[in-house]
Length: 205
Image (cartoon, helix red, strand yellow):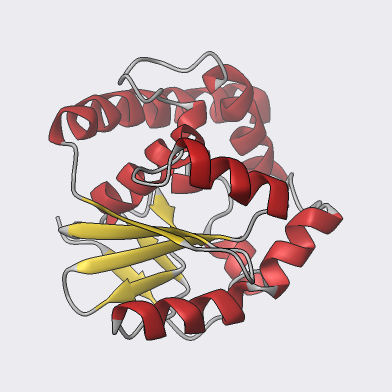
């Protein structure tokens, strides 16, 4: 089934939080599946978190550290840099559901044309320097599952990951779908969502 793209609502707002309330998202998929396609040890705790969101109608995680806030404030700058460096025009969207069931989805930093996507990270200077030395030609391990989940949920053919810090060389990596990992994701995600439905019913009484 094709993905469902939601537009017209700014990410980070209450309306955006409502769209993703109580469902697995790409940014947290590493709590369900590891980079090796195996079940994550964090799955049970994440399930309870989402069950609580469904029952209360409130998001359970809204805290932002000053580092996260600073990174968010650099998003427009990094997006402009990316567009100039690659020639790609980034379309900002609100949320993308994996299909019409709306059981899971992602909030991409941008979509590109009809086939691509874009994810940027704006870390602290020391983190970006470490990436330049250790993973300048690949996606950092912490974000592999997020990027692959975004590819899976959107059905896009490629994704570009960028790590950016002003004044330092940026990292831009093109990623294609890892279909072996996608098969594992799809199965574990289906199992997780089925269990989540059952757990929510039991807790709600």
